[in-house]
Image 1 (tube, rainbow, N blue to C red):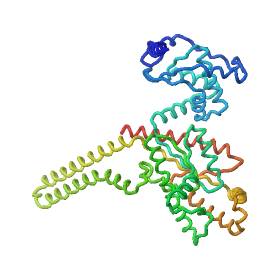
Image 2 (tube, helix red, strand yellow; image 1 turned 30 degrees about the vertical axis):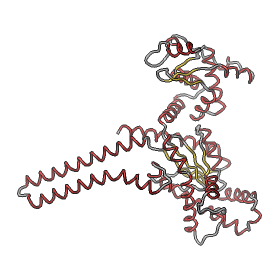
Image 3 (cartoon, one colour; image 1 turned 45 degrees about the horizontal axis):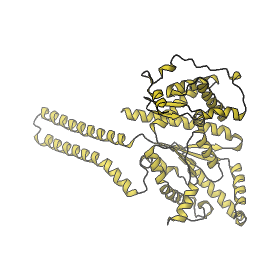
Length: 428
């Protein structure tokens, strides 16, 4: 068995990594009408045959998985039921043509042909290649789904995770409860939107305070996502976009403010020293000009010396910045989305939600009105970040599928922009 694997991996390949013994073999792609519509158990027989897909110089391979192929196709916006069929057709195609050892490029060539035959051509193939690059480069991705109660945050986050093949979804409600019960964090069992405040400003201040505490509870997951380049979706009622819009938070999430401050100082110190040297040099040269400049030639010489000193200092600053960027890896992509709902629909859902809670009967009409008013105040605060680049999405039960499609496409665009930006930074 080992000899067989070695012969497969060691067979002659051209520089592009394609097996020569397959170069002259035509792959027979039958029309879809001729593919037998066999029973469920009959089609599953292909799952018992392993197809090895070789990577790079053929030192490594993985076993082809129809499930993973279909998930990757779903990311490109191919409907799930079509993606499953294409993945099965790919497996049948390879097995029927006795291609049990293929290169990654050969596999993708066959896959793209099948996609095109079903009407999913260049646009979808480009998305496939873009997401493949995204995973290979391990670009950190954090998607925040913000909003108040009953606007569909959990549903949207779960659906997007399935469509984009993202495995990690964190819920701030769970983090809040864990912090409240397992730590000495100053959090209460009574939600902030059910309490009475003297003003809207006081409500928002308390809401932001709780969001900062939850943010500290998320520090470990965010740091791991940034370090390992693993995508993550965070959803919940305790997300304040302003916390995640800060550059330092995006680049180096930390649970220790003092440590973050020290790290920032470390990055700034070399620049400050160089600037002080340049400033000192400028002062000395200026003094020289004031006290010793007996001619215009001496003044010009002094000015040139100042310029040279500044250029040297700037070169050192640029070099230090390049080293810092190379060490920190790709810039993370942080996408904040705020969900909101029309007032009438939201109020109806909130009243149903209140009534379904165990303490729902204890709410008076006045308390219900206060709760709804507080939630509207928080929603207005979250939507105010639209001016800072945060996307606000209107949710409606009648247009939910279209909204999900729009979000799917929007996130793909943002990911593509992030990859392009990361590549541009690497070239500088």
